[in-house]
Length: 180
Image (cartoon, rainbow, N blue to C red; front, side, top):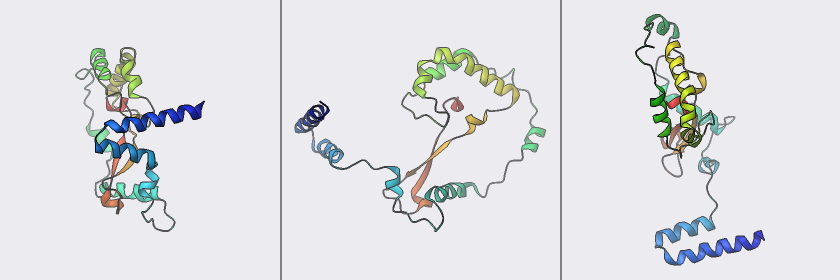
């Protein structure tokens, strides 16, 4: 049965190629003939130093961008910043619900693995606890650690990338609620 369905599927795909332009024809033909490239295929030709993994090399390249910036002294910030802005910056349920309902449902989930589609579809229910979290965060001057995390994905600027430092850029997947 599965063999019959597979044959029927490919026959329909091939028949649909008779009525399309040349660009669409070649795109579909390449999909049939060549397996999709994975990220490991994209970076497989790059040479890493002995004993180093590709992940370490990419990480060091991305970290080198901010190597010359001074570190933030947390003690300095807590001594200087004591202004209580909780009354001035109260976040209301209606604002949170409107924001959550406008999220792009096709964005990827971040390190918290909360789907934007889920948040968007359940905005009316989630707006109250999210508003409470945001208001508590403002009052206490503390942002949850998970909201400050990101998954960094290396994306090549050119194919194939030749130098990690120049031809690869980091794209950060952030938590959905961390963007609010």
